[in-house]
Image 1 (cartoon, rainbow over the protein chains, first blue to last red):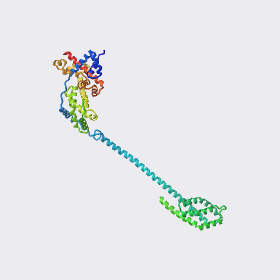
Image 2: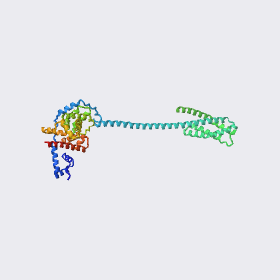
Image 3: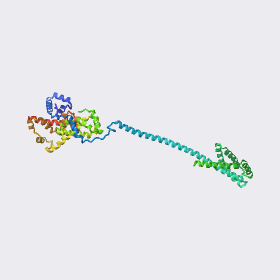
Image 4: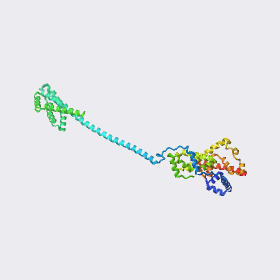
Length: 253
Length: 193
């Protein structure tokens, strides 16, 4: 049988370790039981002087002796030691301000971008309309200018060498005249539309002479032109167009 | 060992909020208990009083690190044990410088006889308690503190380990060595009687 060591006996005396197995061994082993009894006696004899009694007055004396050397803590109540809620409230308020500022900024940016985009679209549309109008004005002015010159040449023509350039010029003016007629009808400009109709008839006559322009044909066309007052009408329209063009430029600028 | 008092919590909060005087209530409330353990470890009334003051000074400086869920009395008890251990360790260094190595029991015994009453004289005068105190002087500071906490303060090995900052097994060993040494000293005494 293995006897208990002194360390095991000491641990058992202080109620530590495997008390159940040690207790069983002590009941079975007289030698260990004797050693344990001796140990118990020794521990019981170890009675040391009790500490002198100290009352509440002693505590006051201790406090008086150390109070002077203690610096006061700085107040930090509002944050951690003072409670968690105030600190959390400040943090939440700060977060709310940041979030609101962020969302407000995003919203303003979005709306501002939309407004800018709409303005740009309107400006583009207006610009396009203006450009188309200006192109129409330029084309019409140019057409009326060239037509006036053709009519002046026709007025003073007497056949021969001058007839050939008139037919060529008439053929070149026909597409522009049809384009201008179409726009005049779309704009419901009756004066212009009527004048361009008559001009179209004259240009067709000038352009489509299989044998060329002879004196008789020129004379007949001069009579038609004078009877309709076509040259005068073209000059009036050209003046009107020139005035309209000047007004339009002023608006654009 | 101690029960956490709500008054302790309130006082600690007040101290940390700048009310230094609130610490006075804690000092008054716990001084007597700290003095008792300090006296048992140092074996000296004057040293015990110094230990109590030093413990409360350390406690005040470390109060910011104190967890309010913990027991202030237990916390201060550990600080006082450490202070007492420091005190007897310092005393032991001074003593060792005078009497030589503690590892030489024979030499130590002789040197102790020079500074205090010898065993024979003690026996003759019937001062058994004084002899026991001398037996305690043969212990290392850690052994003495562990023994006091185990034998007189009824602390468990875990509590001793926490107070001394060592492993529970080391605390158990320290208690055992202390008991062993004291028993041998007292055995010599019994033989001579």
